[in-house]
Length: 338
Image 1 (cartoon, rainbow, N blue to C red):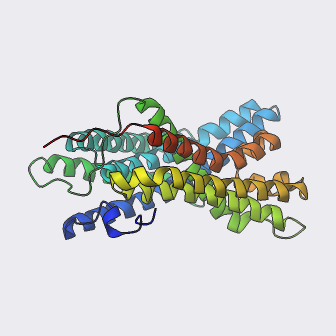
Image 2 (image 1 turned 180 degrees about the vertical axis):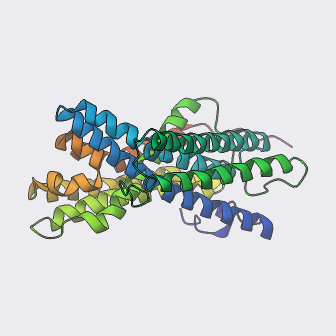
Image 3 (image 1 turned 60 degrees about the horizontal axis):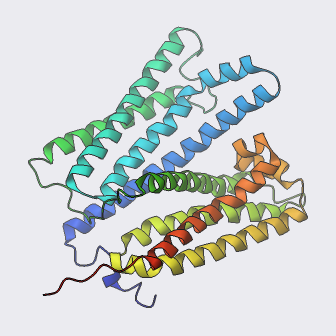
């Protein structure tokens, strides 16, 4: 652990100026698309919670109407994730072939979803389902903002496709390359990576929205802080693994996996304990405070929501701990004799 912050422990060490610039640009792109995905994810959850609420109250017709009306909001989330996946493909840069294949697939997905959203809004407007292109709900410019947002992703996707086409003749992306995901257990790895992404998006928006939504009055201070802390721990845990751990060299990653997972687990457990202590004195906190931060969970059940809120950072830490234990028990590869 003592040398993990040395320059030699990071993959960027020794790279030229161009590689470092490209890598910084890719990381900034990931941050941008992550924020866009987080906000569209929360908007999607708010729309979904409204539909669930209508079904629970015995109004499935209203739920269907709201679902059809808010479909561009839902599709915008998946379109945002396609941009995030494009940036992440460059970030991992497993190989030139994998980069070309996956970046092209995600870029095409963003273009297709953007086209579907634009066509859908136009059809809904012609059919009179939208009274105008600026109805003002769920946002002030809805559904016009969905069209503008889609045009951005269509332009982004076209730029990626053009770059990938010219990269065959020109020097391709030369940022740091990370080892391809092993075929053995790839399904489980991809599942947990996708799960971590959802948790990270949930945690980020849970903390961000809590700055404006939570009630620090009426005796909810401790519970509000606890809910913010759990959301922040979840988001930061994933960020550390993605941007710190994955930027270490292979040897450094092997050395840090288990210690880092133990630290992450300890912090997650501490946040969970603090949450339950705060909940003990604020039993009505979840229904009065939590709904605005984690709408889909609290609209289903307060008990389920409480378990889910606490489980998010714990699941991240436990899966990392399992990975650390497996790596520690794995036999070292034999060195070749000269």
